[in-house]
Length: 126
View 1 (cartoon, rainbow, N blue to C red):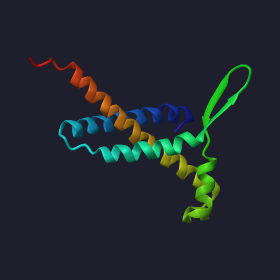
View 2 (view 1 turned 180 degrees about the horizontal axis):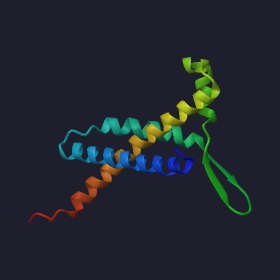
View 3 (view 1 turned 120 degrees about the vertical axis):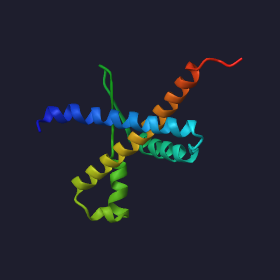
């Protein structure tokens, strides 16, 4: 498969999975089966992984922001059985884990957005 096909297919698949998770979350909210604990765990994990990894490089032309996984990888390398893996395998697992966590977090946020839009679009009862 050519590289450009991956560049297009991966974000489209990611967005499709976010929409799918959002619809599932909206259904769970409306069926009163949604657990705030699940959302809290995903939100805290996502923020705990994202905030320390944010990095900005500023020049006189402007700032550029990116994610830095070094802090997470160094903690994994010495303290877990993953330390026995090759460094590139640890990086791949770390990025994959972050992508899955981002997928679930964005799916939950999108589900709440769908729920809010559906509630606001209903006619008001007298």
